[in-house]
Length: 199
Image: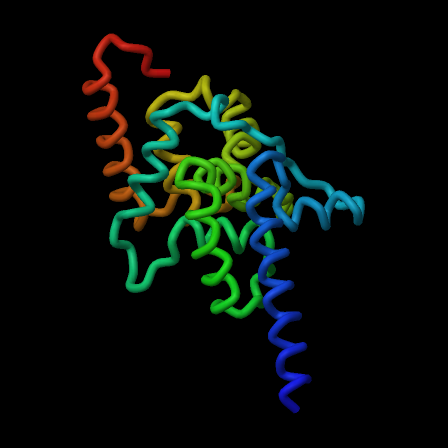
């Protein structure tokens, strides 16, 4: 019995080690969200395009990071947990597994890389439930422009739309207050930057 237990522990340690190495290695490649891979292999239509950290305007990144810290509900999942779910897991994956991987992501990748992957993996919906993944694709779908060409008002709407992902529908009244908060945050950031390069 002791021999079997040692073998199982060794196997578990090996699986954990390979998982950590795998998560760490993803820092060098633009790995698509799991639903994008499934859609690509099944031939289903979807919209997604990888946006590197340099292609994402700093104010938009700051607004997403700021909004994620607002108290919206009790025990809100962290950006790392949401990134883990969107990138690797389905909705029916046990929450403990998502939390475990989310807890590993931030020390392995760092906050900036977690945010980059999050912004590329947020699920939105277009007409006839067309899957749209990431703020880059959402910007092109909703505004017909690149994300760096949007105004602070449009950035604020993208930030809040992570809680209202249907791009075909206007933001509900319940989210207008959140939209106003994000917009004021962006204007304050713009004032802080002054005449420096804001975009």
